[in-house]
Image (cartoon, rainbow, N blue to C red; front, side):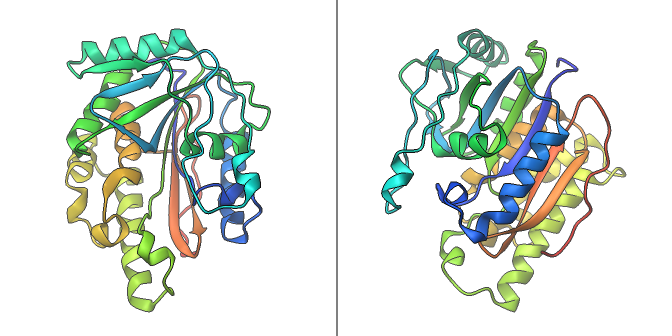
Length: 279
């Protein structure tokens, strides 16, 4: 893996709400802006969004990708959001190559645009839309081991200044978002967040132990309450498969009233991030 590769797992919030001034996303917006300041400006972004699942690993190859407004029921302005970031076909070709060389089937998608798991956080982090962006899908079946392996395949990328982002959500229970926060549900939420922090940052754990924990993530306390379906967690598995080591950035807060986290692996410096807080 190029020593210039930086990696982030971000919690991207609910649909376009972070761009509409929703107060439940204010802390998330601030955290994304903090990450953009603390990490070096990337030469290109490769982003794995929870909102694209394909039969095989699939990569956007367009030089000027469109946007996909893959949400419904929001104000009209939600469907006028623009983020004209260029694509990067050379990076896309390299991503496809290294994944195939690792024995995982991969292909390009020249007509596929960028979904809201891409353009919403990037518009917050890099509003000028002048950094080339390539999107990589999840693989249908949502197997944790397969996504750890997908991340490991990306270690062979050689693209100086690359930033890899896993865009998901450390808490993603849609029913819970529309229900009052109770003592019991908050305890489950916080238990999983603490398990995730421990797994990703505790220096006493070996990389093999981290890998095993993430492989068996559903056994963690509160896991299936936080993730009835795992598509919003698996971008983290891709990030860890690439990083293969402890995170050196962590940010914790609340999005839509639920505890959530973001993690970073900054290649250029080992910087201690914020410690865990309950809200």
